Length: 246
Ligand code: HEC
Image 1 (cartoon, rainbow, N blue to C red):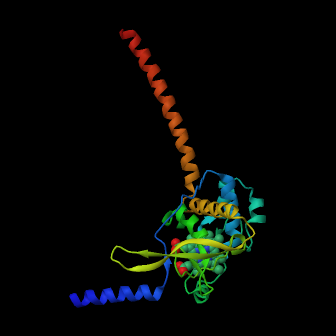
Image 2: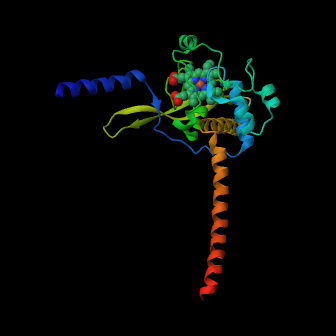
Image 3: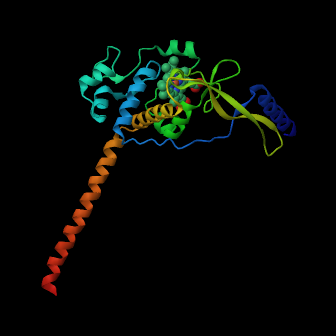
């Protein structure tokens, strides 16, 4: 038992030494995503089809549903959001063969239909802003260290590099962690504009994860209005009945 513990400890120490600097402990800012902001969802959809759909399908979503939910005409969707020879009733699939994708990236880019639910919009917002160029000149990310997705939005955001600090754990080990990222080469967008882009994409992914969220919230308001009205009518009825009794 003791021997095993010693081995485990040695392995843990070795992995710290081999893996080098690690991202700082989780710090996730609120994304400020508002799924009821239709303009934000429309922008998110545009970024998604232009920058993400080449690798990531959203195969639970149909283009005509998108048109209806986001208040866009079907013609508008066909012209601006559908690039492949897909039809308006088709799901948002990709042409890439999964086997080939695995050979290129080492992992198959996952379908993003449900990522809004599994990760949440704050995480997605942080992820899209968390890309940096590491010491080996490779794209890395504070949320998924050593990931195989390239930073496809780097022209918009620019290139960030990490600034490290020493962190000593409770058990006395010191390691280097990323303190923050610094914008080394500016991109086409200012940091505020890029934060807006990341927010729009995160909003779109949250909507993708639960398209009914738009209707659900809407119906909820009607239900409350009905209940208020019904209570009022019931009260009038009660007053009417009791008038004879009194
Ligand atoms: C060139 C192909 C490619 C493009 C384009 C691309 N990705 Fe990725 N993406 C990947 C790969 C490969 C992974 C798997 C990364 C890993 O786990 O190492 C991934 C992973 C992700 C994940 C993590 C999923 C999870 O829960 O683990 C998210 C979120 C994501 N991508 C979002 C996006 C968004 C948003 C865009 C568009 C702005 C985009 N990707 C564009 C290839 C791509």
